[in-house]
Image (tube, rainbow, N blue to C red; front, side):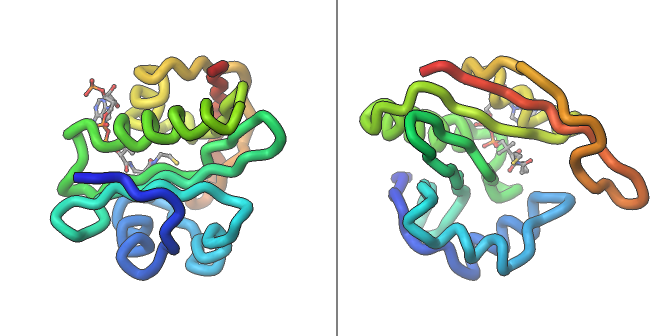
Amino acid sequence: MFIQSDPLLADEAFAIECQVHEFPWTRAVFDSCNSQQYWRSVLILNDSIAGYVIAQPVADELTIMNVAVATVNQGQGYAKQLLQHLFARARQAQINTMWLEVRQSNTNAIMLYQSQGFVQVGRRRDYYPAGDTREDALIFRLDL
Ligand SMILES: CC(C)(COP(=O)(O)OP(=O)(O)OC[C@H]1O[C@@H](n2cnc3c(N)ncnc32)[C@H](O)[C@@H]1OP(=O)(O)O)[C@@H](O)C(=O)NCCC(=O)NCCS
């Protein structure tokens, strides 16, 4: 297992995106993260992508845009390792604060973020589409 910084995300990663998210990004949005504005960390297992994290740095802040681990690889600490890799890079880049938004129904992700020290600091009502209805976004923050 190793983690690679800033490879281009292609078909293999997008397949994970579609597999694990109930409301995946479109391919166009996913591909738009293959630019210098974003940090991409990809976890490689047996020559295949098992997960990734995408984040956007602005000044001394970093926003996590997406984290995903392939279904078959979940529950083995890989998302935690991806986040810790990101924290190390963020500290090197003098990032002071990290942010993210998550659907309030996404218990696994919320547990992951809380286990890594993120604290809920806000809520955006009806932020995400959810079928015929809408769902709140919870805003989490971590001071590095
Ligand atoms: C959220 C997600 C990335 C977690 O990946 P993972 O590799 O399974 O997570 P880890 O094994 O590193 O778990 C880390 C911590 O997260 C929490 N967690 C993750 N999955 C959990 C589950 N099914 N039940 C309870 N807690 C869970 C736990 O606190 C866990 O720590 P612990 O094992 O010490 O208790 C993965 O479930 C996923 O890809 N989900 C779909 C995409 C998504 O929702 N992304 C986040 C929103 S952008």
